Image (tube, rainbow, N blue to C red):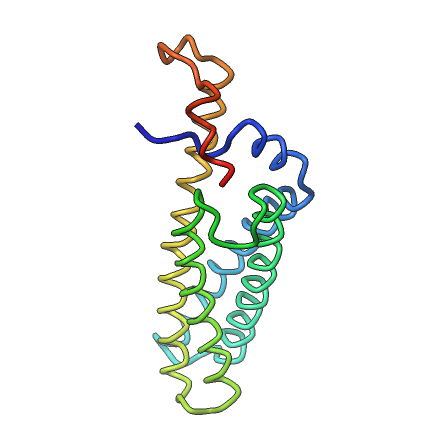
Length: 172
């Protein structure tokens, strides 16, 4: 049996953090920009058209990624008392750094010209694949948090309750 994602105190801090709302707004915006950019990159790779639009979209996606990473670390600090690698989000943060590294490599290749445009676009696709893995991780955590909330609000439906002992270790 897995531990709940948040202790009662962490849940209160999460709900009180302004960064919770910011993350809730930025995540779907970033996903929409990702989808648009993915289409533009694939269009360029398929027929060589729209290089400028694809490039601008990748840069926009990367800037949104930086923004969501910074605000996400502020959120993590508000909720768990540390900016990164809090126990419940350790692996999401690890993969986030891979995503950030790949997007940053794209920007460096764009500025330096070390890769031709086709390889830059392929690098962007690699970054986007990592982003999809990371987004899936966060969606699964979101679902887990929702399930924990449902159990906490209606313990009779699960045949038990979430007690203080089972959530005590989450604040470390």
